[in-house]
Image (tube, rainbow, N blue to C red):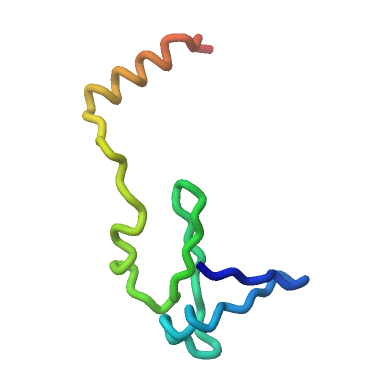
Length: 82
């Protein structure tokens, strides 16, 4: 794991071994992506978006329409209409 210190103007230096893996050039752009749990990923901005597929895991068990409708009905039952 690597760490970097944030300068007073919000700048950071990417650790050398990370730069060696990614081979960025001066002037290259990067994106910061955040997943649902708050983890942040540094990704080259020139990368094709299809390479990001699978980065954020899917829920363990998707809900069927019947289960979603039942949840909506149950949660909405306590609300009064205006």
